[in-house]
Every structure is written in structure tokens, then in C-alpha cells.
Image 1: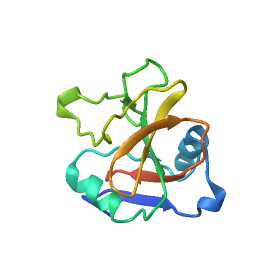
Image 2: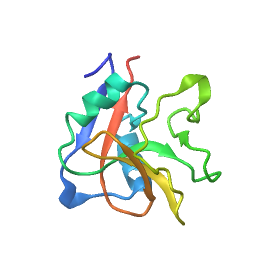
Image 3: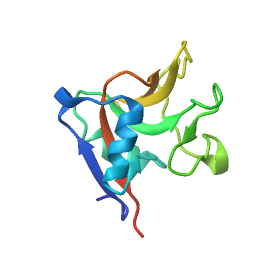
Image 4: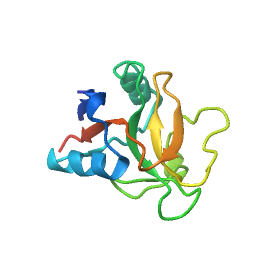
Length: 125
């Protein structure tokens, strides 16, 4: 729990998922891939993920360089939405349309078919 939301961290990275499958798995839990809205939430997640990369619910699959949160379709920059890109990211290399958070709390765009652990979030109702 953090700020009233419940989180599921899929730690078994031997059973990594591509971004679309991770999102589908979250939906089976009645949740979505996590939307990170503050430095505090990013720090909370950073403290839980260890050394693996984890999918978050941010992508630019529809329009290149227009990163949207899958849960509500808001973009980075809407209403001051928080971001934590690593230096030089997003670099928008070909096919890098989905976003991963790493142990340093920084975000990186990656190919959506790559396999990573994932984080689901179910906001307070």
C-alpha cells in the first residue's frame, strides 16, 4: 500500500512478460500497470524492485514521443504529470515504445516485446 493504492510487484523474473501481456495480467487482478504520479511514489517503488527492470504503464505506442499512461490516457506534461527519465531518455530508438523503471528509480523506453517484471496498481476506490 502507498497513498491508498494497492500494488502488486511481479518479482518472479523467470516468468517475465512483454508489456502487453503484463498489462493483461494486471487487468486479471482488477488493476493496471502502475501510473507513477510523484517523487514519493517513485521512491516507494524504487525501494521495492531490487536490481531488475519493471514495466510501468507508460508508453508511446499510438504516437511517437507522446508518452501516455495506459490507465487514463494522460500524457507526461498533462497537469504537471511527474516523470523520472534517465539521462538521455527517452531516446525513441526504433520500436522502443514502452517504459521500464530500474533500481535507481529512473525510467527508460524499451521495446514492448522485451521481457521484464511488472508492477500493477489498484487505486483506492
